[in-house]
Length: 307
Image 1 (cartoon, rainbow, N blue to C red):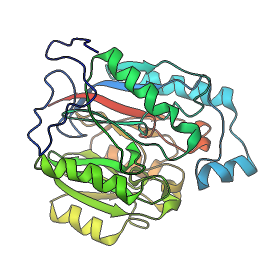
Image 2 (image 1 turned 180 degrees about the horizontal axis):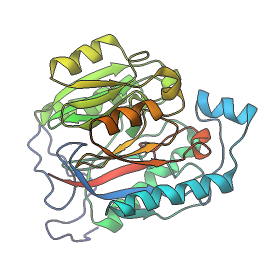
Image 3 (image 1 turned 120 degrees about the vertical axis):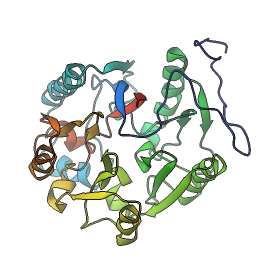
């Protein structure tokens, strides 16, 4: 493969063994709070409500997702990104991939290129192969591919430049996969913290998501106190998101940088805290599509941010 960007050829393994991989010139980001310019979203065209998590199973039993309403809500989400001037890159939908709307999981964008993850559930594993095609078409090199165990993108959380929080719940991200990814970034000189979470919570981005430099939203009721202490020791102010809101994906939002956020409309405690701090918040109704198990952060892969 030799698709060219302005800087280098597409490759399936850009990572340098032992570290020292150069950051990309045209893509990637230093942190998750700089200004978002490009985002990868998945189409809900073939969305199906499946038993992917405790949350999705509960809704599947009691009040299954109305797919047409969910698709309309996703259009509103796309419009919110476009309103803020973010270029939206859409994944080509495939009927065999019913959960492809959740682009956070099948890959992880980094300063050095994209990581192709290793999905846990068999009906989602094809998303990894689709992700490779997507990055090839965009001309974004692959940093590396997870091979040691399962690992999903919702468990890779860049807290600040050169510092990543990696979740490990066992069911979706296994310790072996988490430690493989951790070793890569330690070799690049990053600070890495592993967070061992209960599998009920699925991914670390259910409960911990950066908002702005040194400002992080955290569900204190379900986040390990050691993680909270670690964040505070690094100088982070914590916005506590209530447990009930968190279980409804209320802590699963997207920071666009420049004091702008896209958040689920139902997360009023968080939205109130953000507005009190002067943030511009796009409130999007995600109540139907989130029945399938994920929120706004789960549905987005940041491709490029600029300081």
